[in-house]
Image (cartoon, rainbow, N blue to C red; front, side):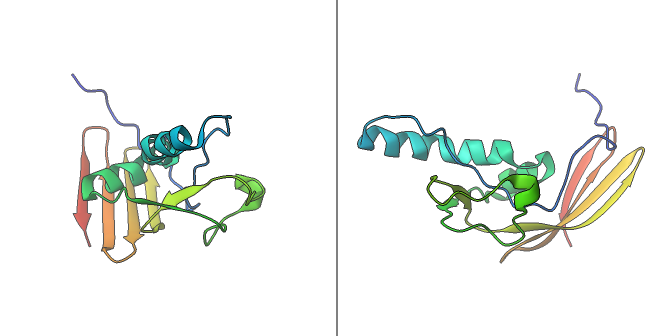
Length: 132
């Protein structure tokens, strides 16, 4: 039996998702393979759960290298940008537009670049996703 969803504790925010791999000394060819295998999963893991759910449902998990901080990057919250690290971002940006929260309901509206606006609604018993 599935557990209940607690809309009050489901985290969502407006910061862009980025990921940088552990910088361990390995051979160049092995390093490239490791980055390709780990980057998408790690970037999804570092996303808010609602954004990750939406991206997985829409198949929007393509990634790209990030050489500069993304728009809305907040160094006070996310740390100083280090251009010397290999960093990834999602190919299509997504932005949290609206959040409505109550003890038994959470509604989030996102804008996915090039794919319109999407609304996710969470209650203790259900999750719904629809294009708005």
